[in-house]
Length: 143
Image (cartoon, rainbow, N blue to C red):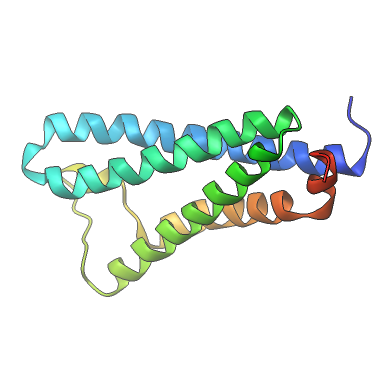
C-alpha cells in the first residue's frame, strides 16, 4: 500500500484520469452508435466522436503510465484533463451562445452539454489537472 504523499497524489491523479478516460471511451462508443442510427446528424456527432477519441487516448494511457511512475503518464494526465476542460468550456460557451442545441429525439440526448457537462466534467478534470501538475506527483515520476 502506498503511504507517501507522492504516491497518494499520483494514485489519485491516475485513478481520476482512468475514470475520465473510460467516460470518454463510453462516449465514443455512443457516438459511433449515433453515427449509425442518425446519419443526418453525422457532422456534429463526428466532431464529438473525434473529441472523445482524443480525450480517451490521452487520459487512459496517461493514467496507466502514471501508475507505472512514467513521466509520460503525468504529461498524458495533464494534457487530457486540460483538453477535457477546454472542450467542455467551449461546448458550454457555444450552447450559451445558441450555436448548438439539445433535442429530445436524437443524438442530442447522448451529449446534452451545457450546465450538466459543466457540473459532471469540470470538477474531476480540475482535480486531475491539479493533482497531476503537483510537486508530489512530479516526485513520484522521478522529477
